[in-house]
Length: 309
Image 1: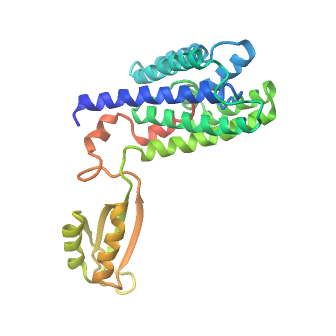
Image 2 (image 1 turned 60 degrees about the vertical axis):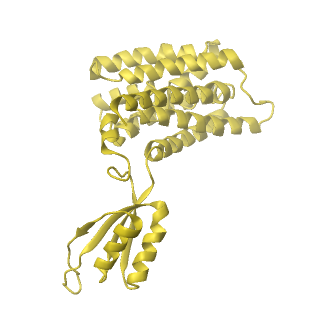
Image 3 (image 1 turned 90 degrees about the vertical axis):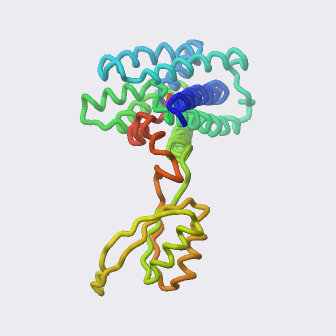
């Protein structure tokens, strides 16, 4: 993948993510009066209180926060995030215009509110997660949280939680306590879905395996020949015996773990294996390192920027 292709992929993530987030807001959260934090939560409250279009409200609220972020963190801060904010606002207004402001469910049925909390949470989580995969964000209260974290002892996560808690608490007074509880469900679903998308999407699930065996040479050859994987030999010594105990460390995709276990068992029934989840694998046979370098943001930064539009 060339750098140009990677930038096109980033644009795809931002556009698709913003559209999915807008679907969750316009078709589910807003019609159901579920203000699940973030600028979108404030926009939903404003729509049901003053009849202001949610997309327009998101834009009006987000742009000053974005400009404040640029003033504090510099011009390079969030150029792609501005694109995410503008696209989210446009898509939300467009969907409102095409589908109306009543959503797709019948809200005379109480079950529809729960379905909206779930469906809206999944769509917004997928959308924000894709935007974060591009190294951008959808602006809004996460910028405010970063500013609070910079000038107060609060962490970004704690600041974001407090901001969202205030918005959800406000929805309890304006709508009802029940709607605030539904909003809490949506917040949880959004967070879990974002984690799945940011940490798993675009990477191959894999395991890191440590193998200690007297038949090390035979197992090495089988890993190279049968699985087509390499590995690294780590040198240590047994705590009890004091003897040298070379350790094979290899990373394999999930669908090859069974074959690796069979190889080890075939050669040494007394072998010792430790299997761990590999958070992310970069390099030959997995995700190219250059893609991670072009992403611009580490996964730690992406997680700090997540949550709500």
